[in-house]
Image (cartoon, rainbow, N blue to C red; front, side, top):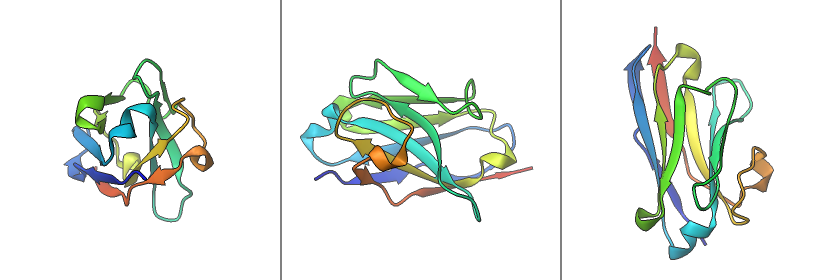
Length: 124
């Protein structure tokens, strides 16, 4: 069982930055891929970024490529999402998820564990 807790969300002006964290319980975190998803009001949950268990492979949604960076620290059992040049359309609840197969994937159905989310609001 893996429990995930997101933090680092908040209110920021357009062009600003935030760093989200995803703290995981359990020593097996290092074998899991980590993904970040987001859901805006009235919209479906969408993929943002994913990173393999070793951190060697990453993949981003086109909408965030070049602005967001996903990373992880397996020693601290924590995943991160650095968000720069934020836009109002980035406003959403951001969720982290863990996939026990360890390979990066964009499909939410592939993830085994989810956090409760953290709100990110970008003002114009």
